Image (cartoon, rainbow, N blue to C red; front, side, top):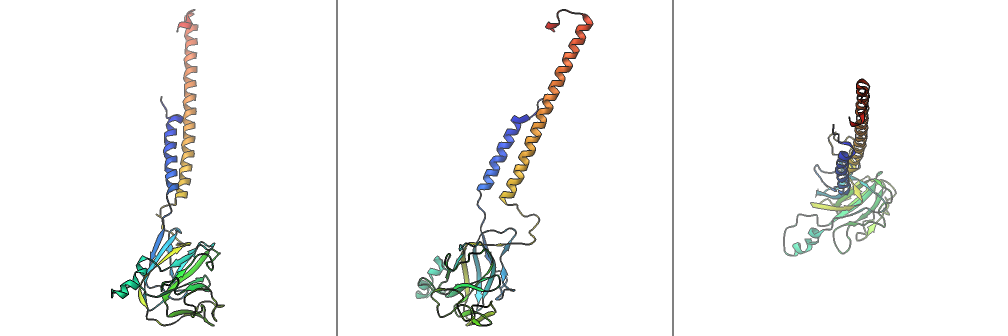
Length: 278
């Protein structure tokens, strides 16, 4: 009987290894988050940016209506985090204004970053000659990975603690740390002008979505998990091939032994001297 043996299994091994290599070469899909319900202004009401598994977060988009949008995100640390509202679209705003073209973007936003306890990390209103905001990597960007809160508002609003402004609003054209009178205490709210409105997009680096506590049961496994299952499959195939090969060899040995026994019995029965010809 013909069995697959090792040769037949090699084809399967080649196919599985090729698939596993393909999976490992696939880039992790980056995520973008769009504000659905209005994001809150406090740590408790902040919009959590979650997904089944934590993935790189490239963009957050939303709409301001004279308020502050606060988002709960995960930062990878090592000062890799950055955030900016600058884009080709926002750089076009001054030209559109000169031409009298209506603008539905937030014309002068402000960005803030707070740690998990609500303490200020850094903030910016205007930078590089633009009314758009930039929180650069390096410098004041956090070393520690973990949960942080990213806020955006119009330039007329400022975050405050129980002791006053967390970031000095007078330094609007700089990236500033929590050096205001209220910088030593956590976020308590926002105060100032609430007239700014429009849509926005924040571009991010060094940020990720937060893995959901109870991911969907049917969620697609990560490539590393899939590879682990493939390796397990390879082990089973090799084990099966070895078992089949051993069984085939045992069967062959049994057949040869049985055949030789029959020949010896036949020789004894007829007393033939020409056994070698049989």
